[in-house]
Image (cartoon, rainbow, N blue to C red):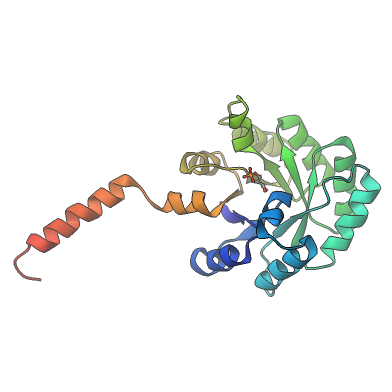
Length: 220
Ligand code: E4P
């Protein structure tokens, strides 16, 4: 399973590229806002960080665009910034038409804001390179996300669709594990979620036990 950082902060991204060797990046309008920089400035800076790699960077079109022609026009403009860019398009009737058109023009698309298998199926049919089921948002609003990735994966496998699943809005190590076990191709989460996933209380306890043993050994 590929590890994508969900961020638009260049310092975080540089560190994650360096220390974690992340496989790609996802951004969204909230992350761009949190970067404190204008949209086109920040995506250009991010593109620079990934220059010379084949790692995908998901960049979202203006979320106010509702007509497929406008989504396609902006998607093609953004895709011209960098060969790494994958264009994020929200799930909707017009959005799926835009996915089909962008894909036909050779632009890779990440179908985002996916909350049902039916939406994931429309995205796959339209040729989306990536499909992003949002786990955390489902749980937050009273749904149970546990079966979502297995179901989307089963649907893709039933028909041999080549879209890759990005388990998105992932909030904890348990969701990372569930996504991996269910065959998500990629997982995206914020820095803090991945940082937590490196640790485990038993590891901390074990290190303490071994350090005590080391210290109690008469000679090294
Ligand atoms: C994924 O591509 C999204 O950017 C992301 O996971 C959105 O959810 P969040 O910002 O609430 O985590």
